[in-house]
Image 1 (tube, protein in one colour):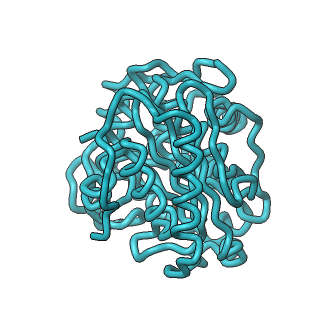
Image 2: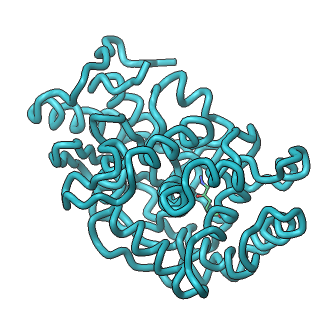
Length: 321
Ligand code: DON
């Protein structure tokens, strides 16, 4: 409720570079001392995350990149992979087929909820929670697991504008402890809502979550969605504009899980969090914002990341509404 006193009303573009630089620095200074939240440890390797690190990066659709703090620190992308893989699968299948097979309504329940599957006749409801995300990965085109994995990794790398690599320790750690995701995938398979072998899909999903990125990568990935699917730094078209629109719509419904309504109310932008402490936010037509700060709130969203992003949305005039 302590929203910025003088929010700027949204206009067609980001403010000039000096002003963006100043506001990004202000956001950093304002929240760097915040020590609230808890570092995720349900994936054992994540417990070692650097609690005090904090990085903020804004990337504009014109290719400008503004960063402060620990923006080079690598961390596993985790759930932030979900909207980008959805955009890639949407590109392959078309938006209509993707909606029929995965669903686009919010569950209102935690990201790893089994009850959400049982409560809803369609079973998968949204690609931003684990059930829908594993179903999305199961739709990756390819004749075998290797080809499907390459589709996912190469697609995410094109969003980032550089080749992304798996953090093997995080992958092994999650693969050894993700019985719950395996159960979700098998349950969906039983309901006819998993579109490849459930073990294979869970494994590819687990690898996808273990790809290393940094806050700068996140900002550029977000800016690519903001830019109608063209990476503003490399100039490469990653997906069509129509697919971006679909990915942004599902992000708005469930990017911050059961707190998505509060997020939209305060920040007014589609965003996606991950349990390793990353957060990406997209301001369509303007740019993307990436933050990194490991401590999380109860729903699994980065505390400092949310504060800094809300500040940026207010001060840079990004709020869609
Ligand atoms: O499937 C999982 O549980 C993790 N690989 C990703 C979860 C996640 O990032 C949820 N985020 N807030």
